[in-house]
Length: 163
Length: 394
Image (cartoon, rainbow over all chains, first blue to last red; front, side, top):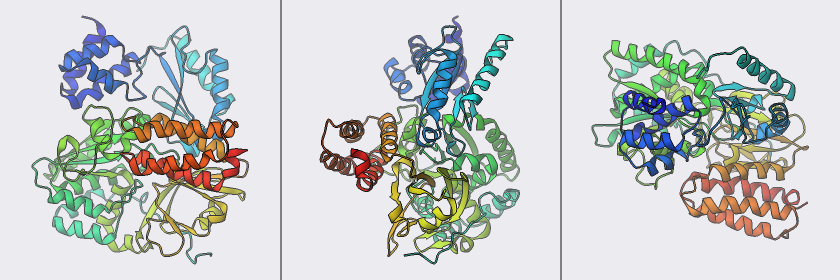
């Protein structure tokens, strides 16, 4: 059996097969796969015995449920007012410059993706960003370079695929 | 007009929560009506921003005739500039859990949920630990109540109560028509009490110390204290618990950097108050005889004179444009057109009078949009365009 199909089956066993279990299942797949492929959305529809269109409709509503292929680490920089006032744009430029990709893209080795997001709720420690589920605050271009180097080193040392 | 009111710091929410076991057992031995009366007489109003009387909310659900009922704690804190709920959940989770249990006892619910926004995923393990300890105690005292965390996935609109139910039911987070209200038709169509995290924490205080200590704070119609999330151009950003009813000029004296040009009260969906109106504006829930009283979810963003109000408004509108669920036309098209409109006025494609048309559009949205999101876009839009018109044009 395909690993995604197996994952979906396990998630459905864990959460249940009702409509109100759909979101946790979608989240579980994104946690592992980093995005929802058409294949996994169809598989979820089949597993929960509902229309694939309904799964697609729900999945595409939520900004954290990506439906195109993402990198292993998704960087989400807050762009809402407090962070933007404290220079989130400079931070974004520093990241783009370091990873050599622009907003919305994924590095060719599939490690990082850069996205912008709305208020993360760290306005008093702006600017803030998320890398997967980890929060980083009070960012500066220097600080963000350090953080990213840390991640890059971790990958070089061959850290096992967490999450 | 300078009010006599002094900015008063309060310490209710973050003071010790170690007595939660005692508070819980004490309240489970009281009559349901007694607790509801206590809450009603405290005049606690919803702290998420809408300000619905909490006691009444509990009463309506308690009166609803159904076997299954739910208690939901709304931790989908998405309003730009708000971060108090995260702090409450990480510092005093037991207060929230205890208040949820008391609420469950009052209305007769067996299940509770905390809807936590996806951005706060990292909080989940701590809260789960607290829930485990809490449920263990509930079992010990033979009180049948369980709490689960439901994770959101990055949609601002899911903070709207009916959108939140839809989301929990596995659907797109699109708000429902109201009525029916959650107290009779909420999650899974069952009577549901849904309260903000801070409201729960205040309910705990009231159930612990009685209504009077809470009621003694604040001013008429706006009783008690409130957590404020202070950010922007301020030397001391952070979370502060202050008495309700303070005037904005007192607030700015305390938190401003000396050059405050305007304060955004209540986040992107709230109002922008320019410097000349600081004196006449107070923070509360309406009904004040003099001046303007603004309700708030607690977001206070300060802007100093180096900030362009055009950029601020542009940022808000991008936010609304992205977060509008797209269900109803006034909001879906309105947000888009407001954003396009101010851009074309700024770059000279449209003349300044076009702003008046946009103001009319905002007003239309206020009347015709289905939920609070579309209705409240007009708040920040009108208050910024009316007070800083020249910055929108030049």
